Amino acid sequence: MKLFTFLPLEDIALLMSKQRQDESRRPAQHILAKEIVELAHGAAEAKKAETAHKEAFSHGTNTFALGTLRNALSSVKGSEDTEAEPMSEREQELLAYKQAYAASSTAQAISGSTPERPKNEHDNVVTLPITLLKAGSFPHVLHAAGLAASKSEGHRLIAKRGAYVIVPNSGTPDNPTVLRWATIEPGMAVDPNHFLVDWEALVLRSGKSKIQIVRVVTEKQFEAEGLTCPGWDEIKAKSAEDVEAQQ
Image 1 (cartoon, rainbow, N blue to C red):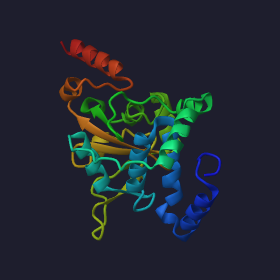
Image 2: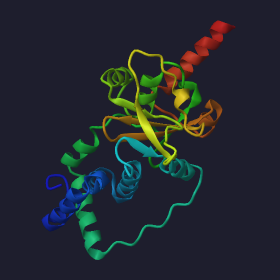
Image 3: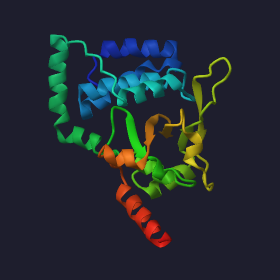
C-alpha cells in the first residue's frame, strides 16, 4: 500500500488494522486493486474494478457468487449504469495528480505489462463465439479471453495448474448460489461447454485473483455485434478450410 498508492500513512494504518480484524474480507486488497487500476486506466475503470473485486471475493477466494455473474451479464444486456457520486475538491486534486503520474513512463510500463485484451470487453465481461468452445480448447479460450498472452501460454498455464473455471451448480444446499472453482486439468481434452453457467457464460481465473467472465454467443451474433478477440482470424480461416474440405 505504501509503495503503490498515494493514500496517507494514517489511512493505510487504519486500513491494515481493519484487514487484521478479518482478513477473509480482503479490504486492503480491494483498495489496492482500485488504486492500481486508477493509475493505469482512470477513476471510472478503477471503480468498476473495485466493485468486481469485492463481489468476486465476497465469499472467499475458493468460491464465486452467482449473483456477480448475473449482474455482470445484465450490464452487458443493457441495464443502465448508476451515476457516480460527485468528488470532493480534495479528491479532484488527487485525481489530477494521479492522472499526471499515469502519463509518465513508469505508469505506462505498469499498464503495458498485461496480456493482450480482447477488443470486445464491456466492464469485466468479454464476449466470445461458441465456435471457440470445443473439447481441448481451453488454452485457446484463455488466450481469447485475455488471460494468456498466447495459446502456448494458455497450455503452460494449465500445465502449471494455474488456470481455473467455475463449476456450474456446485453450490451447497445452504448456499446454492456460491459456486466453486475447479482446476483446469492438464493433458485432458476438457470441453469448456461442460462449464457453461446459466447456459451462457464461463467464469475463468488465472492465478489467485485474475478473474474473467466470458459471455458466450453464437458466431452469427458475435460478428453482428462487430466483435473480435485474439486468434479470431485464425478460427475463421480454419472454419473456412473445414467447409472446403467437406465440399
